[in-house]
Length: 375
Image 1 (cartoon, one colour):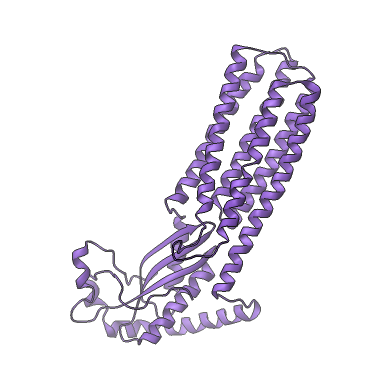
Image 2: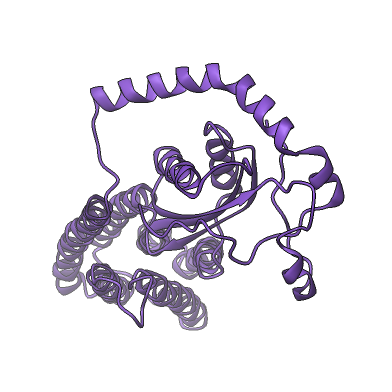
């Protein structure tokens, strides 16, 4: 177990209703009412461990994070190889056709394939162990890489718009249309495959940066498709087809940019899916002996989740018993919340008659306190 707190660290003042309505007797009654169901839950949990035994030691959590990083690196290497092959095919056709538009798309794909470099560096850096300066480790490097990916998407939009307007002002004929069309289709297929692969892996391991890079690859596919559609229009005698399609592609890139920027921004702002918070709250309420919960906080560190939670336990428990409940609460969270690697659990007790133990903190402002409401 990692970092469970069990003393009264900065806590949460209880309301008078809380102190009067949830005393020692009520807690014991409620505890007895739930004991039968709790025994059944423990039996089911024990059977689950017997069928699929596992551990929650720190080493196992590190192994899981390392495996996620390895999977991310594998995705980057494979997608880099696919984009490299796509770029090579396009470069060969450029030498045959002399197409300036295809040359621009080839350079674009080659440059964008290199976005795997900052992401790969971020995955490698994220493997480094936490230390006294970076106490949460180096997982945030992925968020920095995500910023670079978003910047690359924005540059793609600017480049696509500039080329489209340039072609409108100075139309040019396209030769070897069949070869240019084949190269554009190759670029679209290659980028779309890479996009799907990166997005799927990014969502699987919880990497917002890898998802953003997948969206970036998708914009490159749109740009390559513009070459295909433009050559088709040119074959029909519409000289301005290429730049007009390019403007539509620019608009599509801007929509993708919005999605990627929102994904990275939310990660930088410690945003998590509210469903995960609700799932964690439900897991805490299901632990036998937990009679209420306080705030539940989560944040992404790279592609792993960490959580902090307050639980309310009966006031008559010993320190050892409260510690056991904190361990059970963390255990439940790790089982229930995907990508969660560690949780810090603060135990609070139901206030009995007398002074509120949190009175000393009252002058520090409003602090949301635990609640005894159970679902």
